[in-house]
Length: 318
Ligand SMILES: [Zn+2]
Image (cartoon, rainbow, N blue to C red; front, top):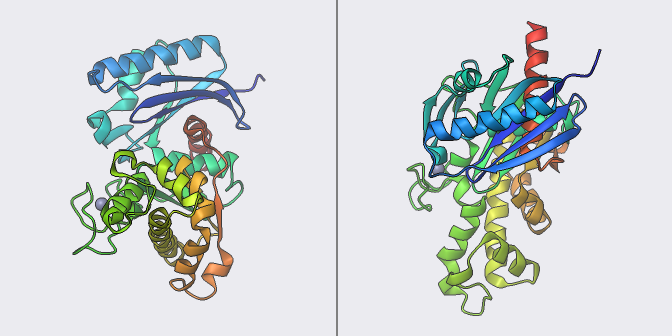
């Protein structure tokens, strides 16, 4: 029997990535489209459907589609509940796309961080693990927990919001969620920039300037030993240590997998301080058991395709 293929689609704030993937995680075709925030919801859905039709025509063996979407998702119903950057609220993404496609095939929708965790579990750093936590460190900080091989699901689809655990709700930096002192405001792209902005007046000798305060400039300066950039990294490392300690004490995972382009770029700068922050917060015995490792896959569309194989497995177990 010819091998079945899956289409993975990651819908990000600035671009959408499509991949045709086989059951071993090999990418056979990969395409991207700009997300284009000027489009209406219908126009975006039409563009997605048109790209999917092209891939389905080019790869007849595609048997299902997996989609990763930012924000909370009702994966049973295929609903994108609140993708803020896309202006999608309560959008029946699965059914809207099914109506637009000529071929009838299963479409699975899940949160983008859950999809990243599933990609690592099937094809990446967490291969063959049944209990692990995945932290996505990019513009923000997201998390997913896998217990006995299944993604942990919450009552209202807002589980594992580790980025919005507040460590200083009174004096901390304000977060877009409305709270103060969220971990995301220390360990994420926007967190690094916010820490640097807060302390820049105290470091007149720093190479960093208000005109060029980006994650790239902070990492570059930290690599050169710049005192402000080093302080930013120390604070970010401590926050990552707190996030990992929470996850270890709550879930007792085999591994914490750190994903996202940002953490791959700066892990060498914060690993030592992060491990110290962890050591003083973890229950004895748990920390020694837990590996902290970088993810293997940068391609979010691969994770979205992995969602297809994951859901197939779950359906077979029922
Ligand atoms: Zn927050």
